[in-house]
Image (tube, rainbow, N blue to C red; front, side, top):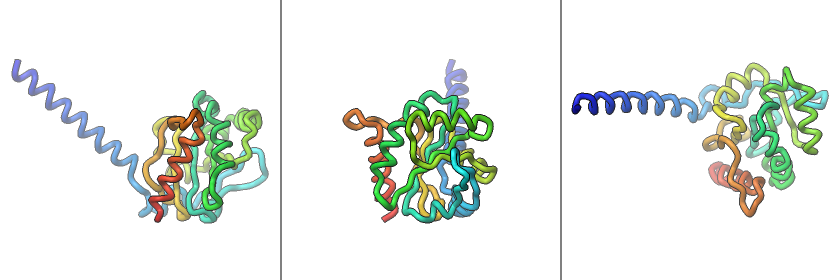
Length: 183
């Protein structure tokens, strides 16, 4: 019986160690490799335009929300993301990244239009897929990056807690926390 308990404890310890290593890799800052959002060129949905690291450099902080057309929670939060975008201070930008926008372009565009989204929505290029999108383990995931494209704080996975019934206020709290980290 004692050997069985020790064996289970050893297996549990091994599993926990593997998970800790895996999650540590997901939360690390990619500043040493040029930043999570550097050297990319992404198509803007609904516009004949591109979004690059130069757009990130114009702001102290950029909120980057990762979503997909098949993700119900992602679509539900669109009006709240628009509210957040309208409330952001001048030194903070917002961009959404539709990970299946290359194959579901019309659907992505329709979702954005139906929710009256005026923020920039992009389709990730290979560089963004490798540097940032690969870090998203669930959808939606929201990252925060500085003007150099470096991650600021940890990503927020899923929907934020609403404050006074307003999810955009939950996001605004996260923005304020990340701005404080930049000081």
